Amino acid sequence: MKIAVVGTGYVGLVAGACFAEIGNTVWCVDKDEAKITNLEAGLLPIYEPGLPEMVAKNVANGRLHFSAALQPALAQAELCFITVGTPPRADGAADLSQVYTVAQEIGQLLDHHLIVVNKSTVPVGTAEIVRSIIAQELKRRGQENVTFAVVSNPEFLREGRAINDFMRPDRVVIGTDSNEAAKIMKELYQPIVRDQHPLLIMDIKSAELTKYAANAMLATRISFMNEIARLCDKVGADVNRVRQGMGADGRIGLQFLDAGAGYGGSCFPKDVKELIHTGRKYGLEMAIIQAVDQVNERQKHYLAEMIGRYFGDNLAQKKFALWGLAFKPETDDIREAPALAIIRSLVHRGATITAYDPQAIPQAKVALTGCGGRLFYAENKMAALDDADALILVTEWQEFTQPDFAEMKRRLRQPLIFDGRNQYDPVGMAALGFEYYCIGRGYCV
Image (spheres, helix red, strand yellow):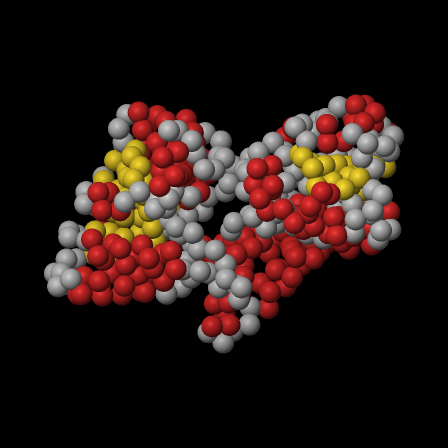
């Protein structure tokens, strides 16, 4: 099939490359000409394992193209995927201005039947508005006879595992009121779902809500365990053992039950807030989801509070090493990352921090400009430790799992670790001579 993908951010670039990988001809469109120039030169705007190789392969074989203009891509397309950003507004609602702008441009250019697919995460009712915008533009041009369908096809990609999630999905959700569109979407995804992965056809509003409900459920599990972890620290229990006992129940399972420094990223925070906003729009207070959001915001400060109890509120003479800036491993995404809250809190109390992350330092330098001369960056994890009063571990990158503890003790002023991801065994750390504080294992300051 011939496909246009509008937006070359995380979702659009992964979707475009994967659609090309299974044999389609794809044009990835972005109004940012510098981004398109870089993509044509093989320079990707995001870090995602395996994606550079897939992009290069499909550009070389002529199936993947990049354009700063929609018209040449749309002229040949049978399907047009909208994958632009929907960032949160101050009130928690998704900002749909980019989606609406794309819909308007489609209506201004369309001259043949097209299936327009909302793959961006959008609230209930967006497909209706997109349909209306396109129809209005066609009417304005006197082209009411041009037909089109609008489909909801939410993405369920995990950063760091996006290619696998796209090519081997748990499910593909298609929301449509058109039998013809359903047939074409089934054909498109057939190479991906043929190994018994379900393709679910449903009404559009249910498809739009499914993405938010799924992310809210996962966020709920995380916040629930983080609240249990706080209780474990109070009573002296071990949250890892509680997790094992809970997860052994087949009705619960182990996924998304790890206690830590809170969730972040581009999806969970904004999707939870949008679901709260949608509920209020329809006169419903989403009490559980509101609590999930509140617990997570509090959890992001847990490590900083722990450090404050240990050293006191005045940290002007203290220096810390921090491992991990990205909100999770295998990505350079720092949006809503717990590390940002921790760094700002400690710097506000006068601390100096030297941070290291395998991928996210350039992004952190932009996001944390307000930290002045109290935040520095190291070229590697060990260099960050030099003369630090303690190590703060925030992101569970694989290279942090089995470090040289003897070298760590030599570099640190004192063998002290605050671990926001429970990477190490408290008993083992004590045997190595470390003072070790983590989340929910009865070792809280």
